[in-house]
Length: 259
Image 1 (cartoon, rainbow, N blue to C red):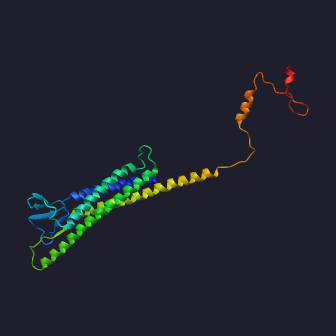
Image 2 (cartoon, one colour):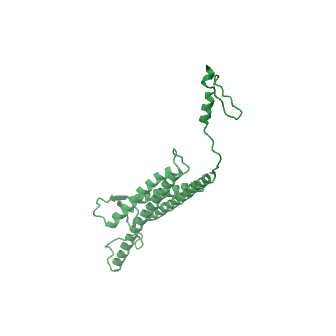
Image 3 (tube, rainbow, N blue to C red):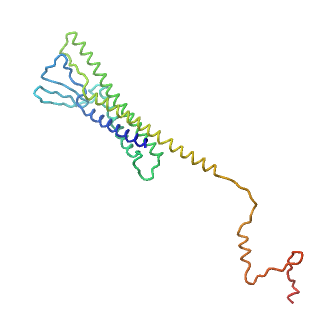
């Protein structure tokens, strides 16, 4: 019962993590404009992995996708790749986990096969969670570096050179989603450990029990029943056993008796 609960809880937690990774990747608020020095502005800028947006004070918002791939920074493309890999692994892990659940019976699938599938899905969830956490952390490191570089330029009198950007809501969603996927993968691995000892223990007990019940007995050798049946079949209506003499020997008639 505990193994089933661990599997189901791991599946639900990992599902939330994978869904959060998809939402975080699609969000446009990975970085938002810092309004610390200028809280009242007519234009508010924010950027995502796929496009950058500008929101005016009138409420009109305009988004422009990134039309180039080679022109983007290498770290930015690495973040994209990590998030995509995490989403793909998470979805594959969910598909494998559905068939590995102990409460779902598919044909004559044994517990050993379910244990292997549970371990596989758990490893996929762990890798997906690590990819999401790594991608979000790399993007956050880029923001921190650019933020302090922009701050240094501002102190040098170059205020209009570059706008400062800070953490957006998508980063926090990605961190939480990666953590949930990681926790779900660990729970699936624990569920796999709960399946394997039960099966090995059952095999060990059955093997020793069968070996102890074997007993060998010695006794006199008895002839096969085929000879007795053959001897009985020879005794028919016209068959008469030869008479025995006083010493116990059988006396058979000679050829002179029939003359």
